[in-house]
Length: 261
Image (cartoon, rainbow, N blue to C red):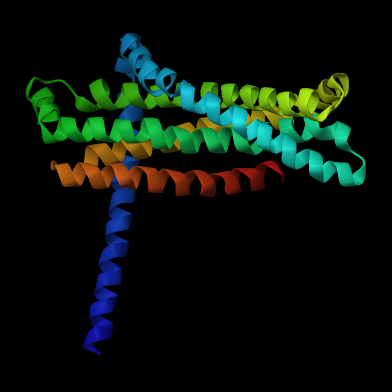
């Protein structure tokens, strides 16, 4: 009986802790939105963070997208060839990237590269009492540190997802046309005829915006909530990657279900 009671206490404490952290994250999100005026009045702060989170992530985004597009073209050609539809390989590559792989893979790479860096930076600022020093000087850490990074992530994610999709399509073209021998005109014409602006492209952009909000907010909260120790910052960085990845996959399922009706 005592073992069962102890187990229930452990499970209850863990559940309460998760609820508390979710509430604290929602509170931080609300405070970030309220304090966002500083990010737009001093937009150079946001631009600097866009460079840090977006531009410095370009290499891994573009290289990954090129190889993803190449793999999609190879796998798609061998599947479509069985049904005599190899000319539709451009549609397969474009729709897979625009609808799913572009926003999702970009968000996962963003969480792994920029999200961890944001968490570590804010965690170290907390450990070295820089955030406390800002409060002592009547400077809000949320408006000065959190909000610019939040809006930088929201701005950078759709741009990175768009570049990922474009580079992935280029990778698919390089495999399908010069390597496999698919007609270039058929590759592009099929793509243009079957990719819809509103249903495919705008939905993909909307997904990337939602993923940008989720990944950036998780990274900011984990850094802001991290214990001010080296071990605490390390664990917060790990939680950022794990939580962001799970959140992206769960949100992708929910958004796809709504978009497909």
